Length: 249
Image (tube, rainbow, N blue to C red):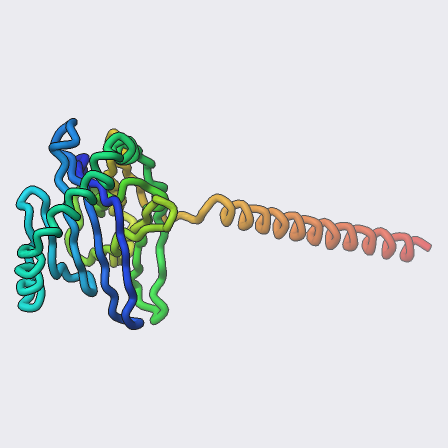
């Protein structure tokens, strides 16, 4: 099950060095209790999603994870002004905004889940089912594929949980499968905003709009066929009456 977290990112800064390389700084407040003194403040440096160096207010020092950042961490840990800077940052970003951050962190928006099938362009019988979750908050979410009530663990892939840029997130899951009429496939979604898991069952039948268009088309075809048959019968009867009158005269 998805459980509530106590961490809230309060600042993310990214610098794009090239089209492929980027550098990111992330500050985070972790609430360990109701008092502001129990808040842990961390600053993390990333390069191309790889954690390079991190400051932790509980430990009170920097930790490097590469040869270069290990030496940089030693230099920053020897700087007597750096602890003061971090205490000021912790107060401004975490302690002074504790109520606001916790109220935002408690907000939830349940995902909108859609399920569709994508045919392979090479004509193979296998298809891809796509389960998409849109416009949810917070980002913690779990998606699973179920076949006849059992979890599917093969031929399944997932995208990253991607921000929309408006506090909401989206993510997608993919299932490669061969369609059969005997099995029941569903996408299960768990999220903090849901009191119980959401199940979206795959229905291979045509959507209502398509069924309606086909029904209207068939009705038109039947009506046209009836009119044509009636015209033929009427023509045959009229021709027979004309021949009878002609013979009598």
